[in-house]
Length: 144
Image (cartoon, rainbow, N blue to C red; front, side, top):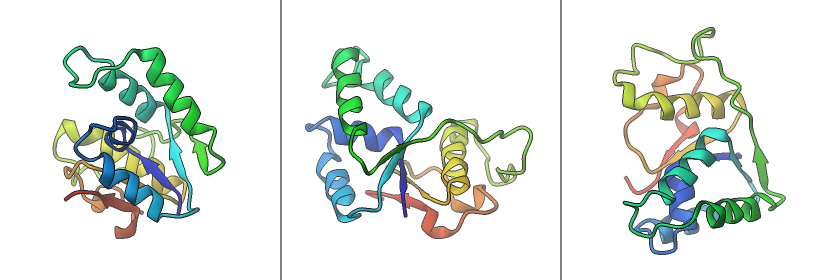
């Protein structure tokens, strides 16, 4: 099953000094040819975080974009547009989404479910029940 990689996963993969770099690289390698996906939210988040002056291994935005572009040339990659309308559909179970800080991860899970894929993250803040059609195997939390 293809995996939509969260911003936290992209950051760990691109930053060799990140505490979860080995974990995420090993996990991605273990998935074999299942493929991975990105979307505007995850890509922009990765660029934003890695280029912040407060980030320990800060990189220039151009270098980050080049690294992402190179990774996206892999034939196992798919780019998905942000296509889930959270206000007009029943793609999110709002009774399980209890904090505004969860919204991005819940949205990304809903996007993965809409694509018949899974969402992979380092964040432990959500449950599969936040997306009505999600199965347990469509939410993968690494390092938790």
